[in-house]
Amino acid sequence: MESFEVKGDNGFLKIEIKEVYGFPDETSHFGGYECRADIEIKIPSYHVKGNFHTSTGEIFQFYEELSKCQIKLKGEVEYQTLENNLEIRVKYNNMGRTEITGKFQQSMGISNCLKFEINSDQSFIKYTVDELETIVNKYGNMTGVKKEK
Image (cartoon, rainbow, N blue to C red):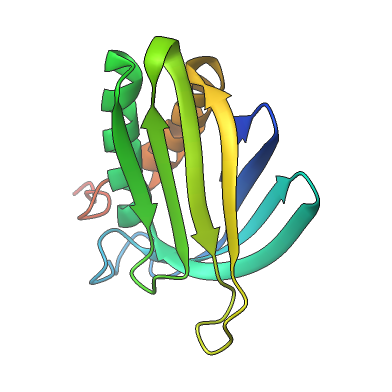
């Protein structure tokens, strides 16, 4: 399955799409296609593996905004699932440095939550944008992919 990774000097997070529902015929009200994904976050002293639901539309929006920031080497972009159990924020600082912050909560019914911070730069983010582009090329934008007639 498809995946993307956000790497840095002191850790990484990886999201792997495990199952896509309705592709290519039925889109989600969240945009694109609803999907189940696995996440792995590794930072000093912590290593978390879990799963969550998202949509290819949410991934598309993250790709669009991150691509713009990567070209300008400035700005801030956020990836947040509609279930609010995953939040990733990438902020470009001086001279191409990036700060990746966020939180992951496996279950909204339990208050356990990992907040994380990863120091990175635009050279790492370039690979993230490339991996996101592969996903977007397959699953399309907020309206999914157009069927050929």
